Image 1 (cartoon, rainbow, N blue to C red):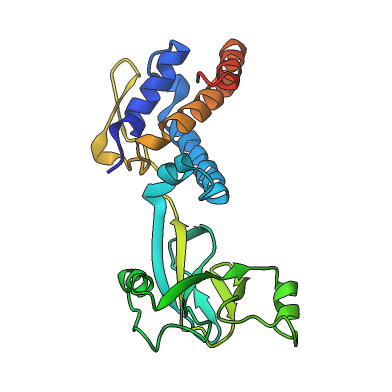
Image 2 (image 1 turned 135 degrees about the vertical axis):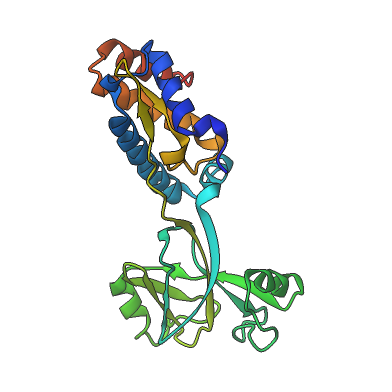
Length: 245
């Protein structure tokens, strides 16, 4: 479960406290949840591109990270339904003497077995380098630079499909960011036309505490633009530039 600091109601209150505003329909639950979902989508895309460059990137995207071993069928792997973005390069297990895959040495059916095959010294992970389709076509017809199990390649032949070479690769390990849920800010309208957060009708954030700062900063900027609060926007930009906000 995501840390309370990045839950919908507490985050909204944090944003409004900086703006020195009360919770009201001026900044409605619908506007807030839409902005939260936009920030989530943009942040996930950014983190996926940066992964695994820095520890904060790894920590922040962690709730969305999935790892799966996918069998190769007719030369390609079909990515899971909840696939969103690729994290790093897919990998295969090969023999350290470069003679081929490790399937003869150990049957790899789970991610744990994949790891054990490396620990036993029989296998080594090799990245499947993703290349443009034109380069894939050129390499797979080359007489001197043809892909091997030691240097495999692949290309996106569909939105959720990767064609790999050599074509007899058995399984590919894929690390990816899964599709996020759309948050919903449920609420109960009060007699004075304000609202209270309603947990029962809400879809909560999936982020952990590590994402609090980037989400908070983004929402402050979006709120100030929505409220046309130039002073708040300028302060937010200044504080961000100095690493305070």
